[in-house]
Length: 127
Image (cartoon, rainbow, N blue to C red; front, side, top):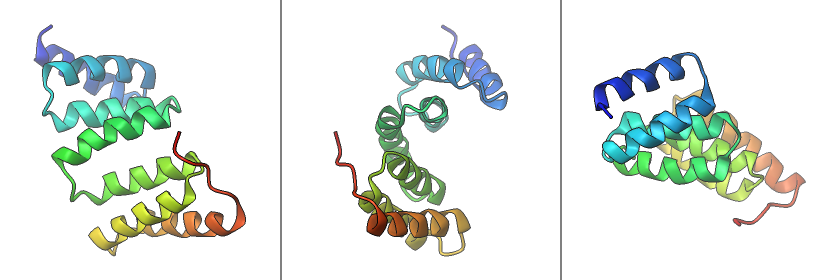
């Protein structure tokens, strides 16, 4: 496949929030361009969009290897852990996001939600 054409396809389905298509195209793009932040982030967003949070977390690890200082990625990780009911981990990761950028409201919100749920419900363990 031509990387440029595949990249355009990923951009198009990403703009339309067509997560299944985004996931499939972006996965192929990650194999062709394994150090592409755009490819890995798109793949992660596709997985997250269809509710495959464990797989999305794995893809997010690749994203964060390429850019570990981005508060959005830390916040996304905390959010997915929260959705998986792994509240203690979510709170810890959200705390890291807040340390990266004190002025990023989504990081503070997910931290507060995760801490609240830690005390209200039992955590699910990592599978």
